[in-house]
Image (cartoon, rainbow, N blue to C red):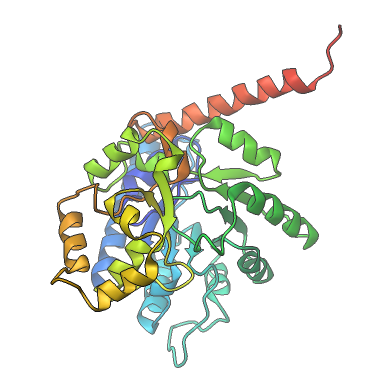
Amino acid sequence: MGAPMAGVSGAKLAFETCRAGGLGFIAAGHLNSKEAFKQLEHEIEIFKELAAKAKANGDEGGQYPLCIGFISHSTFKEELGWNFVQHLLEDYEPDVVQFFAPAVSYPPPGVKAKIIVSNTVKLCQSYGCKVVAQVGSVKEAIEALDCGVDCIVAQGSEAGGHGIRRDLGNGTLSLTSTLVKIAEQKKRKIPVLAAGGIVDGRGLVAALALGADGVVLGTRLWASNEAAGPKAYKMALVETRSCDDVVRTQVFDMISNSYNTTKWPAPYDSSGVLRNLVTDAWDTKLNELESEILYPSNGSNIAAKFRKAAEGQRIDTACVYSGQGVGEIMSIEPAYGIIQKIQREAAESMTRLQRVCLPRDD
């Protein structure tokens, strides 16, 4: 599955992921404005056109389900977001949706949406849509399972982009293994997917060995031709040679929350990023950073400097999201080829494992 990365996962990446046999998601991002809603509609129309063209050209057996990923804390904070999602469900009939941060949301007081339901899971399922919940903790996973989600994504702290703070989250392997067991105990026969640090076939096989049904690719698909986002950031991923160069930090969210109207709330105000001058200076000094943001010393304005660095795509200062598997990404390639390669690598890894595990005649 391709992760719904805001600003990165558009129609072209979703289409190519599906064409390769995966599940490709379009990222809705912060769906809390008319502009964001129109942009999402535009991407959906492009995806549908690409799928129709593929089938017209003879790809009759191709599967191109419409999958949309939502950032819940901003989308469902107010009535506007609830109505946007209901419009999407009615007008475009998505096959699958994913919710994250949090995995399950409840209607705010006084909401007057068209259909009032107990939570976002029930809302989408009432339209015949499958619901994927991305979680970073056992507690959140249990809530999602009890609400009846159709799939769980175990996002480990090795993942790039936003996720639960490192002091509250879990590693990909341990979280995946635990959630597989919990789903079995609850007699929920649904897919459990692993996310975080997985960029090749070996990572896929490792997840399968834990009982997972598949994996989610984020950073690896950002370093693809079809992914949106700054080219400078993509190149930074390719040029990074070690997982040592990645850190899960609150630094960038503390800075961006100081000037953005849409703020990332705790415990999701944490991101897997490439280390740079900003993380080196502040990651272990969060209290000092908060004080500096509120009461700048020597006329220094950290927020202004950060915004300027982001505008100039300066990787030494700007936020470049990345998971810990980045050191094994050597090139920017077509998404179709990336997924096909991972499938081949997985098959080769399983063959090697069979040679190791099966008894020898001698």
